[in-house]
Length: 377
Ligand SMILES: [Zn+2]
Image (cartoon, rainbow, N blue to C red; front, top):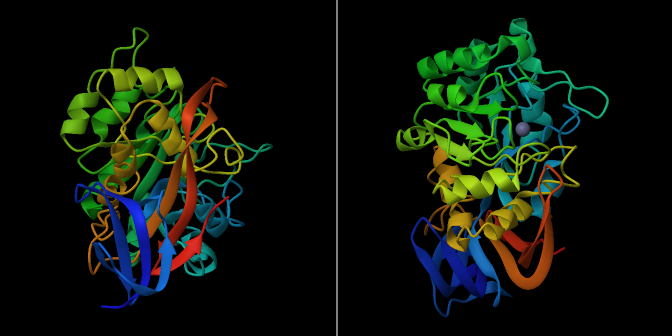
């Protein structure tokens, strides 16, 4: 059978199906057709020496460009790291989601999904000059309205976002999270919870989270690191994982520390999902993008297939979108193509600590809706 597009001879890693083999990946009619040997098509791309994965999902981004000061441009960002799905983490709230949908989500090439913030206008004051925690004023907490907007856009909105911590909820402490969970429980939605410095404490936040909820910034530095001063994993984290809470990197400018990550992983607690938390204050470092963040987990000896799972299959599960994050015949026509080259790379965390790793993960291309696009830097 002739296909529209065939990626020829790459190392195909699809953790959802347990596939790790040299193969061709074919697309037809905008969808993934099959993975196999000796496939042919109208547009054949030689990807020998490259890694072919399901379309990468960045579970925590800020892409309401122009509508919120913290956001970056979705399409140029996604191309830069060969991602096919970006999940905006609460840039917009119920008061300004309509603009996000019309001016950004709908016109974008890349698929954009969103956790809608319970803050009425989302994250509205985040810049080098103005930094106001939206959860510091309970009058702005509009969880019910957020759930109503979510119900109206089930194809785009995947859950509720809330930020709690010293810099985001201040004197309100954990209250905004309680409110988010109460409303999410009634609406049948998952919650993505942000933490920064205490209060509230890491464990107190995790204790409230349910099956399918996401804790983002899971490997942030002390205070509120995942481990105590002796490097022991905090109480309650394993139990939370057992009941289905997902631990997300959410790198950003303040939430990825080598020492916290190393200690947590040494304690047998790798992240469930890898995300960049890209925004204007971290896109030129220290986070850069999803692929650089994946490179950091590789540098911490997380196996390559697990790093890929954490940016494909597991985020798809968090989104309740089992059509994404896998190479399924007849399924979504997305894939990402990257190279892992033997070339040293200097990797920084948010505390300024750097680590040199022997291998660099580089974007090569992506397939979106069955169409190939070059993403090589
Ligand atoms: Zn964020």
